Image (cartoon, rainbow, N blue to C red; front, side, top):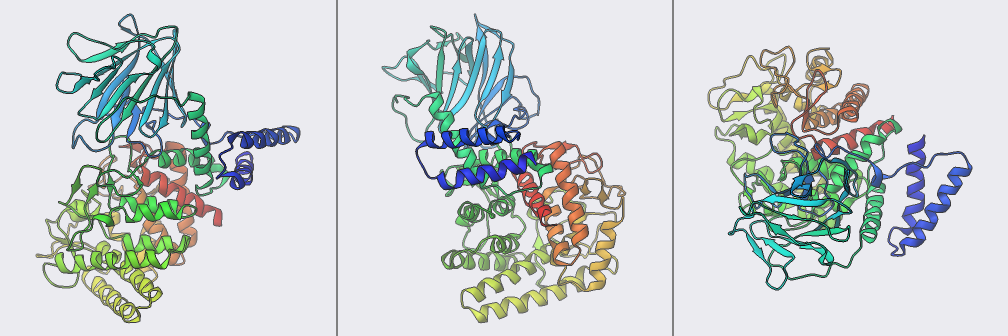
Amino acid sequence: MRNELCRNCTKMVNQPFKNLINISATKVIYSVLSLVLFMTGTAYCQNLSNIKFDISRVPFSRFGSYMALSTADRDHNDPGKIRLNDLSGAKFSANNTVLTIEPWHEQQAVPVKYEATPLQVQGKTTLGTLTFYFESPERLHIMSDGPGVYLKGNIDGSNTLRVPGNKNTWKLRDERMALTIKEGVGEFKTEANKTGFWVEPEQGHLDIVIEQYHSDWLPVKYSTSYAESITALKQQLLQWENGTASVPAAYEPGRDLAAYINWSCIVKPNGIITRYGMLMSKNWMFNIWSWDNCFNAISLSYHQPKLSWDQFMVVFDHQDSTGALPDYINPHHMVWEFRKPPIHGWTLGQLMEHFQPTQKQLAEVYPKLVKWTNYWFTYRDGNNNGLPEYYHGNDSGWDNGSALDVEFPVEGPDLAAFLIKQMEVLAKVATKLGKPKDAAYWNKKAGATLNKMIANFWDGEKFVSKNALTGKVNKDSKSLMAYLPLLIGDRLPKKIRDKMVEDLKKPGNFLTEHGLATESPQSKLYGADSYWRGPIWAPPTLLIIDGLNRSGEKDFAHQLAERFSNMCEAGGFAENFDAVTGQPLRDPAYTWTSSTFLILAHQLLEK
């Protein structure tokens, strides 16, 4: 009740004033609201600005920024040092840590304990507090009221330049960052071996600004105060919170953390990234993969249609002449060696259920989705049987899925189902655009592909994937991939659909206390932390739940949504989870997981 009341109150207060510049007026409103709640005996709840999180698992960053702070390294170790990471992709396949930062006194590290909120990170020491906060996406402040600061990194002569005429600014050219001591308090000193800087505060205060730039840098007068920066961030976070999908009260803490992760993982347009885009993580997976982005687009589609549309289109901006999409993008690199599964038609269908794209938007996406669909039938059907193929595990998104272990190329029911759904959505869009002949064509092709899918991949008991040249099947595979055709469960023959649902409902087969394992725990190929051969993942969970809902299996869909949401509420938003224990695995702050949680927890309100 406390959190439900808070959501209603923040919406009631914030919406009429969301575009006002007069912050003080909003403060007055909140003061009145707090007094009313106090007088009625109701506790005033914390908002998104005040949640606390573990910076060794969830990075500290902000909307728009390519900088993030964490105490964990790429091997998931936590030595307790703040690491400043560059997420621009400039260091391709390399360690993205620019500097490690520690409180320092008399050339010795000072013991510290860090506390993180979306507004700031504070390191408590016996000498005082070290505070990290963002003035803007490009400007990170390190402020101290006692301890000095030691910044260690690649500070050799080829990378570092003291700015002429400004003794307290150095540029790190490889990372395009400038380090400036604000207000001339303290002075950078370099070690003899040029591995780092240190600076002690003078007059009990120190403020270092780390500014990321994209071309070159000129001296700047940093005039925005700490208080002004924090106030502006609070306003942005409040608006983001109000734009996040609502969830049942039991999942409010998870909603807050998911909202922060998604907000902080959005970066500004830069280089190859042409729109505001949500990275998959600001830990180690700091790219935009071309199916991960689909889940993020859906999570934003309830209240933020423009940003949702940008997530969906950001990869389509780089579609090539064949119709292919890149595997992933970041500001400096695109990878074309692999594809990702064509779930984009399904995603567009989801967006159209949550908001109405304009005719201009539909006209923009329609030819791109047509090219993406035709790509698979033209370039990925080597045996010309009308059933496209994967050439690598990465193409499927299930990199090491056991069903794929038959040598490539592999054709299977999941890819066929995605394309059937995509053609179904193309038909709907064609109708909206006044293209009835196109709509008829896509509906006919979807039906023909469905018949081929069933004839080629249904063995009487389950769907199977095959080597497209030899017909070989991995008989040891008990992969959840075989059940992804439930996405089009409303088009499947009832006998097939019922058998698939029966298999999934069977305890211990795929179903665990926490959801659906990607490889049955009864399989000899199962592994607790074996990537797509066991752990629970967000994408298949959402795809299958959507198919179950459309097939009339609403109770089972609700049960799966509840189990996944409970697991995330308890363990956070990791890339994947141990199917048996529910423990988080791999990257611990992954946006397709936080987005899927928001989607499924929101759906739980509907029953």
